[in-house]
View 1: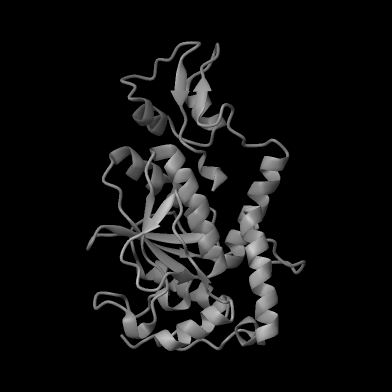
View 2: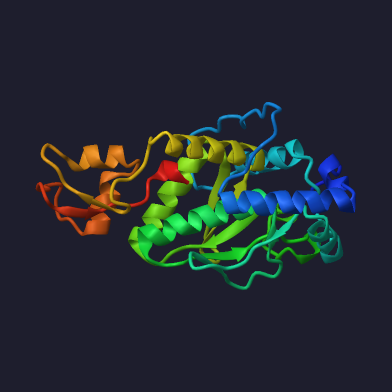
Length: 280
């Protein structure tokens, strides 16, 4: 297959240095606030995908490339072009923290919304599993794509990342459940890859920004908050199903995290609760 066409550069990709400085300051403010504030113009959500799945497909690639076109993202060809995008503030540095680390990432830069996605997911993953999320790839120019990369990959646009597949079964189950949930919300497209084992994720920037705003609004109104952080004390008439539903997780995950042999629980029992899927 031929290489993807160079998508016309969006007006935001043609900003003057002065404007890019303002954008960089705005994104720094946004990162500290933990969410992205979108403009007043209406932003339409992505088309609802078919049943969410981590299996790769032509339809998944179609969806990712439609999103790149929708955002007027450029498919970067060379590392020099990537550096110009970094200088303009269109790609931002991804720096490790306590929740996630980078492993063999050649170009630690991505679109601002991808940075937000990694930081939020990493924090929740560490809370749920007690270990760091591992990012293995971010923006890759066409000239630096590996041999086995799809010619339709959106890594050159800065909207994609790869995550290492956890070896811990509970952590792997949590991560895959979360990715599937976010696919159902039409804010990402995720694929489970085998060689080497990892997850390829394309973040849909506008839709993810709107999603984060709405999640923040729900939390401000007290909806979806988890009592006692990641621990919960069982009350009378509680069942695992009710607890899972209340915290936006699953019975299987609660049983795995707490090593429960059955669904029987007792008042006063303290359970570890995986971070709610809707909280990402």
